[in-house]
Image (cartoon, rainbow over all chains, first blue to last red; front, side):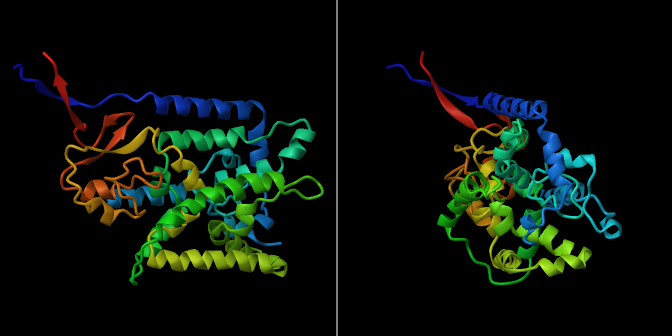
Amino acid sequence: MTRKKVRVVKNDQIRIVPFAAIFFFLLLGAIGISLGEPSRVLEQATQICLSCIGIG
Amino acid sequence: MDRIRRWVQALFFLITNGYWNFPLTRGIYQGPLKVICSPGLNCYSCPAATSYCPLGALQQLIAGVRLSLENGQFFVGFYVVGAMGAIGSFVGRMVCGWACPFGLFQELLHKIPSPKFAVWRPLRYLKYALLLFMVILLPLFVVDESGFGHTWFCKYLCPAGTLEAGLPMLLLQPALRANLGLLFLNKLFFLFLFVAWSVVASRPFCRTACPLGAFYGLFSKIKLVKLRLDPEKCTHCQACHAVCPMGVRFNESPDDMDCISCLACSKACTFNAINLEVGGVSLTGQAPQRLRRIHP
């Protein structure tokens, strides 16, 4: 009868999915930049939205 | 490690709230840095805020999507969702534990000596409903006669906005007090609810009501930086259950959507079974080992 050999293997394997996800969202952000969205965000963020903070 | 985390939290608080000229200007920062996304929940109407709040910006864009499309502008939130998604894919809810000013505020409140209680576990699902309805669906579909929606979460619930923007603006601009009404009372109610709750329970807002945490939690399985359990070393002693500020049972669900990677469990584990990994490579300990049978 043959004995099965058991070897301990380290499980450090580079995961690709996080890099793909980061790339996808950076691409999405770049599309937003190309559409001029940051200027709209800046316009909103530099004004006090009183109703948004419960005043008015 | 907890001391390092506290310093990082303080650093992010100062970076995202770095405009200290507001007592003189009595207004908010209006410079170009406000085009940068704050990783944590940090109201951009806060007088000291130097970056935009992703939840506030996203709701504003969704609320105004009809008008922007009518004007030939395709402002649907790609830029904001791109920033949120990149942060989520990178560190996920680690932001909550290391970079969110409101998370730090809750942790400090919880240090006040008092009887401590657990948070009822089913309440953790409420934040996903708030993300779906108050951040996306209601601002998109409930619109006024001009076609503009409301920022439902900011307007009716967000306690961070009341604390960081509502109350300071009332102090800086007393004329605004004439506009106070039921809306502000409602906001004050939620602020006091979460302040009182934070004293007796750990991070109740993060666990039950934060839509930003809910969004980052969606990346728990795929995020680049995460905690990893070594099942070979874990003895199921449940030491990780007792120390987790989010009520996560790490040995039972290592990819839990509520894990904020604060490393409290890693420190508490005397068997070195919980390690920090980046992209699959272990940083704080040996990689988990598995037994592989080699057939001759």
